[in-house]
Image (cartoon, rainbow, N blue to C red):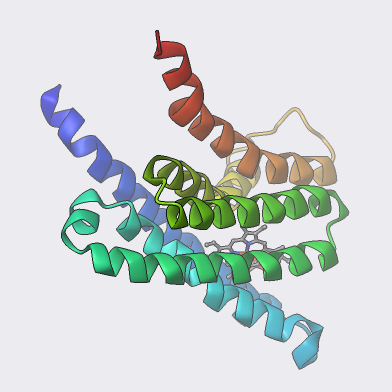
Length: 206
Ligand code: HEM
């Protein structure tokens, strides 16, 4: 029991890192080698490349920033990497908004735009709170920001579950299926995280 408690965080982070690397590989293969980014530089080619390079920062730095031992021992590095994380998330979020508005799947526009705005809000709030030295709220906003960054992984994982394991078998229309798992990809993780960081602690308080 105790051993499982000890290894649990390691298993959790290892799964996140492996899934992030796997879906990053597949997304790059799909967009830059199979599907293509559009005929001209401004017709999304630039946006896709810029979005990829900026979002690599939150994807790679997230696990490092939440690693307690590293943060405590190398606080200067935590500060520097935190700035890169925030810059990457804000620029990646802005490009995500433009890509989201101009993408061809109409059922995905609203969930992607709300997600993009929320991601920008959570990341900016994490920055504002740490500037005020409010560490408690900085941590909470960073958890929300990174959870939303991980939509990149959850969306593709759900896509696999829907199309390979027939997860939404009761929905016939492919368009409704796609829009449903697009919403699920960030609403569910955000609700789970809120349950863990705010609702359960509020209920436990006497
Ligand atoms: C760290 C996180 C993220 C990484 C590494 C990342 C990476 C990528 C990559 C490699 C692509 C091209 C592959 C594809 O088209 O499927 C892409 C596309 C896209 N991403 Fe992200 N992304 C991240 C987060 C987000 C977030 C949070 C949003 C939403 C607000 C978003 C919105 C989009 C949109 C709308 C497209 C274009 C889809 C299309 O036009 O077909 N991304 N992303």
